[in-house]
Length: 385
Image 1 (cartoon, rainbow, N blue to C red):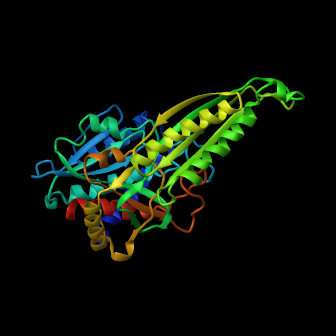
Image 2 (image 1 turned 90 degrees about the vertical axis):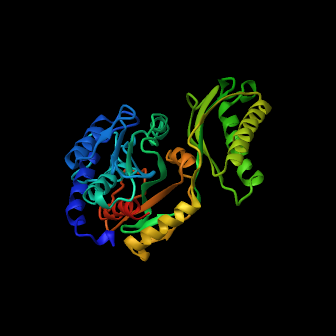
Image 3 (image 1 turned 30 degrees about the vertical axis):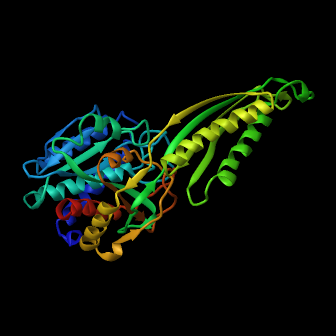
């Protein structure tokens, strides 16, 4: 099995060191020059040719002389605007930034796979495209890289990505075929009332009261209009309004997100959300200013490709190392790749003895023994699928 190749004894500590270097210097969005340089330096050291399809994205090809369509392996590079809260010796050195979603691990795993595949380049059945993309956390780096031709030259036939999972133990990879991850539509809502003194609320239009009514009403879209077997979530994430205890607020600003799994439900949910917001605010004599920010589409894992991936991983990592997992309403801009070619996500377990909190949290600690499974999974697909 590939996972047991002794070459991993050299690659594993190298991967871990790369991951820690990235973790110390987290970068946000499309602005990832240090991470890009680390990737390019690593690829140079391995003798792997690479280009920049977009400013801070990297595309590399192994086995470019091989015949046939390529497999694409993707990792994301960006961090989150979170202040890290742990005492790791390699904790973030940039206040207010942290690799809290594991993209440092994703990049390290793809580089580990690259090193293994370069050593086995003669055995590759087809070309392998490595896609290192920024801005998965927003505003989105996959679509610009696609538009810049990352799926062309060589033409890509299938694709796979990794994502660390705080629901699985290290050494295990979770797979989901079909609808795997959700779509995202974020919103900014301002409710405009009429201010006044707290002793005479009947004179004004209380924007705080109206906001509370809106929050309650839109949840009825989920609980009373939506098929419970077709997922829909509407969440308000922030609410700001008011001046002091004896003033009727004339404005409340809210932000939130709508998560769905299917295009039809997405369209209906956004439409009904707008209708309910406007209806409720109008009923109470207020006005609504609603701005929708359409996000990533649903990630649908191609069923035939997913089953081939599962078979390969079971053979090369061991049957106990592969599990079927439930879908999630988390979003992922790899969905744009999966809209164009068959795609699948390898959910790599990172839970070990030091595990503290889940992804997108300030206290996340990754069991780095999971990196080997992710890198070996990538390598297995390139060599055996």
